[in-house]
Image (cartoon, rainbow over all chains, first blue to last red):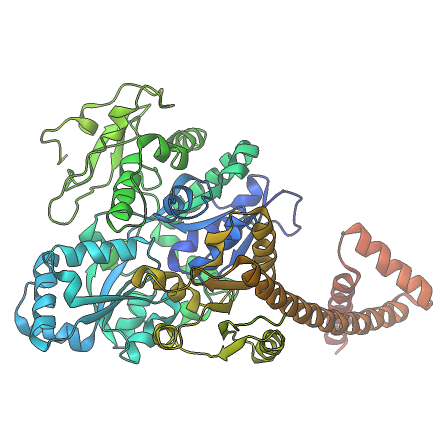
Length: 418
Length: 205
């Protein structure tokens, strides 16, 4: 599985990929460090970006061919209604989960004292509003970019407490890199952020993880590979090679035996550097067990159209996108490309492109091309169900010529469990 | 460049030297420039208080994520310049800006020509600053390289008992053979010969 890194750089197809130094940029770093890109004939240049905004701008102007992106980001770039669109193609999901909703010590203690069930996000959201009402000033929480699952998860969580949540909580944008300082200086009282920042907060005794993103949207796509659509059109074969290299990296990442080596790779100054070294003596040091971050198991990399639609619907709800049709979505999210790349590596994929999100409380199986395929559970906060009607509406015009749908995917009826 | 009403520009750049240059250039054009290095939340307050028409910020600053979101909090907050890239002329300007590492946020309703000229002069400052820095680095590394190459040459001369020109030729041809920079090959030769002679000293003792 491990290809040695060649000493001499072989001439390969040059691709520029951006990343923001977070734990979930690991697939790109691993693929490069293990020589997986080389093995696919790719010469990948990894460009570290200080903010999501700068990553977006560089992709927009072609200074990067693609990047490690927040899952809602390609939707927001490709389907924007209030600015020039930048078509981006998503051929795979890079990671699932990994976000935490963390509170500073004071607010966390307030919740503990109230006797609320801290494992129940709907109860804690309600109690949080009580705290705000009692003290008479809004609670200040932070999220990262508006087109991030952090922001959308945080808002869904608060909204579960009722329609007046917005009056009692102020959501301030803060870059992940500045999050710890913002809590330390009491500029914010809590946040929804990715790793390693939740662990750092706990380690430095500045706050505690209250909920994992997993408790809001189970196993939702966190980061994806987003490539410029004109690039994928011109370089279809290279795109497939890219997906293959990253898929191999994700498989490697899910094996805990590799995590010691991963730690060493991430700690290099051109990747995460000091950020990760802060956690040197932390008991979890890399993956916090509560956050359930993973990269490969249970068809983690499959880009579900129904999940993309769920994210698009949240963006629309927050006024960031206009209505999104199935046809628009299919131009951005391409399960067909993923299926093709995975099949070439002997990895089976579901034959359907969408499922009812929120239906499955436990991992389940779907029909693959060659047999049953494991799929992760997908519960949504408040037992919400999300059916993607768009798929039925424009099935005729869709490029989906796969095998007939299996019973689990679209029909209503109890099919969870297994 | 003497516009009747100067624009109020908030400048955020972690590099104080470069910020001074940009600031001087924009003031010269008659604009009011506020220089600041606030933290993320201070930035929200600063924008609310100073109400700049435009924010110029270095591309890599994490503060950008804060600026990005401000327009979702407040309809009058400046919006990212990339959102205005409709006209081909604007696209060229913004492309140059992204390339030079300048990003800008503009409030609605400011004349595009004025925005363009401000960005152009900020880009010019960033670029000249970058050119200067690259030049310095190149000079430094050229000096380093020469030292290493000289040292390797001397070692080869002693080791192979040859003249300087032969030593240089040997170094150059092996660099070409391994498709390496001359200085890199020289460094390797130094390590090789030095470890070799150390080994023989140990053996002798």
